[in-house]
Image (tube, rainbow, N blue to C red; front, top):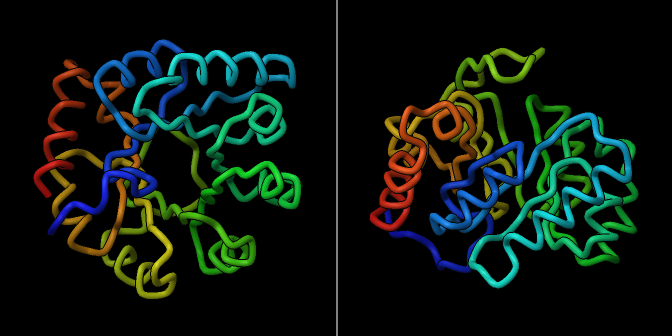
Length: 207
């Protein structure tokens, strides 16, 4: 399966992390798309961490995706944003688009996919593919066959698979139709995160 243009967004390996230290580490390792997902910040805290993360990635190949905090993303001058369904319901999509932000949206069922598509996203995330303990989910694991179904429905919109995915699953998930794999614990809870990231990057380059 040929690797798409290096400018394609999001990259096929798409780590999701919760600290500036992780953003710096992944940027240094040459990761192309990094989502910063930190919960329960007030407006000032959100603006500060987004500003600091953008400073880390400035001048590198890394694209910083801001999770949830769309106001901070706009003020700080970010270019990429990811929203869950609850955040999407409260977000000002007009302001987000006017700011030039690319938008990714999480989906877990048919209704959420319909809601996401109404917002004309730049990518759609489907999850959780497998069981995950990192995030309390009211949805059962989707399974790999759902990836193929979702991709057929969204067509040319990039599809990101997320939830309990390890490197060993990558080939099967890409074959099922995913354009990108969002990874959390397979990196952040790995005994050797740097080696795991390099493994994912090698998969990306060789696929």
